[in-house]
Structures are given as C-alpha cells and as structure tokens.
Length: 500
Image 1 (cartoon, one colour):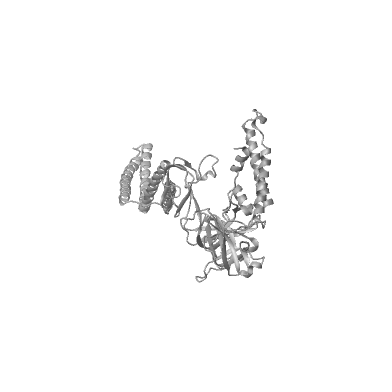
Image 2 (tube, rainbow, N blue to C red):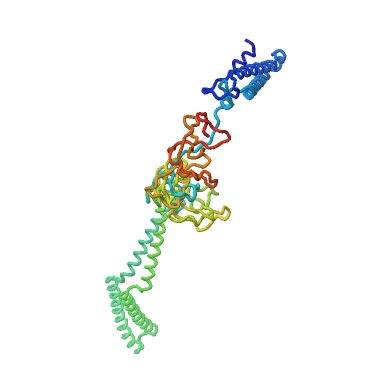
C-alpha cells in the first residue's frame, strides 16, 4: 500500500447519523465533484512528502514528527476547503459535525432552574455568615496550662471546665490570706468582748493589796514622826519612810485607775481599728481566692469552640497585648452557633429601602438547595465612606448543622413575606427565551445534548421590553432543569454540548 493510500485510510471521516440538505440540486454531480476534489487534495499532499534519505540521517525523529504534523494540518484544511466548494452535506457531513469531530462538543454556559417566591425581590446580594456574638476566652491570671479539657469544634455549656493553670503560687497566697483573716477576726472579737470578770477581779485584788501596804506604810510613818521629834531617828531614815508611804499612796491610785479601765473595757477607737483590719484581711482573701479560682478557666457562655489559641504546656499571659514575646494572650474563641447572622452591604442610596424585620431568604454555596428564612435584625450606626455602603445584619431564624461561620451565602431581600397561598414560580433571564406569538421555547441540557423545550410564559408581553430582565415561566420547566444560556454559536436540537 502506498503512503497516499495509508493517509486516506487513516483520515477516513465518520458519517453523521442524520443527513442534511445538500447545496447542489444534483446529488451525482456533487458526489463527482467531491471525489475529484478529494483526489486532487491527496495528490497535492503526497507531492509534498519527502523521502527519508533526502532528509539526511542527522535530522532525527524530530523532523519526522514535524513532517507528519504538517501533513495532518494540510489534510484538515483540505477537508474544510472541500466542504466549502463541493458541499459534503450530501454525503452526511456538515461544518458543525466536522468541527465537533476535530474539537469536541462546544461548551455552553447554563443555569439551574429553581422556583422562587412571587413577591418582588428588592436586593439580591452576597454576604457571609457570622455568629451573633463571639467571645475570646482569656484567663484572668497568667500561668502555664497544666490541663486542657476542650478541643476544636466541641460544644460547651456555660461553666464547664476549659483548662487548668498551674496554681502553686496562687494556692499559697490564698492560704496565707485565710490565716490573716482568722488572726484579724480573733483580735476584733477580743476587743469587742471587753474585759473578762476574772480580769476585773484581778485588778480589784491588786488595789486591795496596795491599800493594805499603804496602811502599813502610814503606821510606820506615824511612829517615825514621834521618833524624829524626839530626835531619836536620823533625818535620812525619816525621809525614806515618808517617801515609801507616798509611793504606796500613788500606787493605790494607779491601780484604782487600772481597775476602772478594766471595768470599762477597750476604747471604741481600738475596736473600730480592729474591725477595719479584719475587713482589710477579708478583702485580701477575696482577691487571693479570685486569683486562685481563676486558674480554672470555664466557659463564659453556651457555645462552640471556634479556635484554640493555646496548647497544653504553653504559658498564657492576658496582659501581654500580643505575641511579640511568644506568649499567648487568650485560650480560645467560642461562639453560640444557635444564633447566626449574615453580614451584607447595602448601597447608601438604597439604605432607606431596608427596614428592621424585613423578610429574607438565605442560601449557602455548600448546600444551594436549602433555603433558610431570615429577617433583617440590625445595622451599623455608621457608613463605610470608602465603599459607599452601610453594613446590615440578617438573622437566620432556624439555623442547622449545615451552616458554619464565615460561609459565603446569597441573600434575597423581599418587599414583604410571601403568604402561604402564593406559590413559587420560575423566573428566567429574558435572553434565554426564543420564539414569538405564543410559540416560545428554551434550550435545555439533557443527556449531554441540547434539547428544544416548549414553554408557556405568564408575562409574554414583557419579552419585547428591553428594560425587562426576567420573565415568569408558567409551564414547561421543572426544578433542577438546566437551561442553556445564549452564546456565540447557534444551537440545534440534539446537538452534543458540554455545560461549563
């Protein structure tokens, strides 16, 4: 077999399943012209081929590859030229079938049909989910984590233990403060109770003893006076006896004053000072107890752990104000996922079209078939002057496990909430609908092919209005149908297409 015959056999084109109208009215003439054109084309290709010896043995396999690529390109151009000049449609070929055979089915954009509420939509915007409240949990004291009792994504109840810090120092300070409180209390109780009866009796007994000694000193002084007058006693002895008597007298007065003080008890000022010291000790105890108990970090709310910012063995220091020194400033971040909101931006000029409590529908990219009812809950008090928008929050009424913080979502804001008797409808972009005078159709994707689907419109008069973006489909389409969007090429019924 010659090289020309081999090329002809390898490039034999498949025939289409359905014949297309021929350009020439005489099929035999067209077939003859086609045969002549094909023979001429292959002869031209064969005349361009070079023998291996003429290329030289130093060319290598690369030159042979370039030779065959050139042959294939010329044959492809010859096939298209033959179609243009002789009309291969009479043989079952078409430009579209040849292009599909060479390049594969065309790619077409499409949209998935989904029923929507009949109530007008004010805004169709994008946003992302955020918790209603997010809490960054930090211990109130610095310390090393010696026990970690939670993990990422775990649901915690308020008051449940999250972590335990090293408490040796705080425990010692707490015990010392308790002892100081007990000491101050005992001192206050002692003063507030006053003198005991035994103390009063003891003071009275001392007074009586002093009075007895005073009586003896006065008797001795009387005798000394007689002797001194008789000049029998020296002066210095008399002075000594008189001084002893005077000392005894002052001692009795002193002991009587002490007895009176014992009977009165402590001063009010002393009792007040003891009470203040007791209060101070109790305040120090409360502070030490607070520090000691703060070594056990508990959940401040019912929520889910969104982030763990410290691990077992790390030192947490909330006053560090950042991680420049390698210390963690917080333990974790948690939020209550039963209250989720969507953060959206509304242009400044449309801000008065939105109101608190306005009905919305939210869908997420992760589960586009699930629609969540929501309502506008609040807005920020200031606008973003760089972007010219105002931030609003939309609260999900019944969140479920599919919703996660910071998911991208789509929000539809309606004028009013649809009533139960208002059934959902299908809306399509105006440019996807073809036909006229009630004979309307769309192209749908079915079994990897384009299929012409007849539809009925509820507002066909809007097709002629260029200001109309969407039209309502009364019948002919169902949820989940894939409608092909207009492109550069015209579609035909049964044509193989690929959806982008």
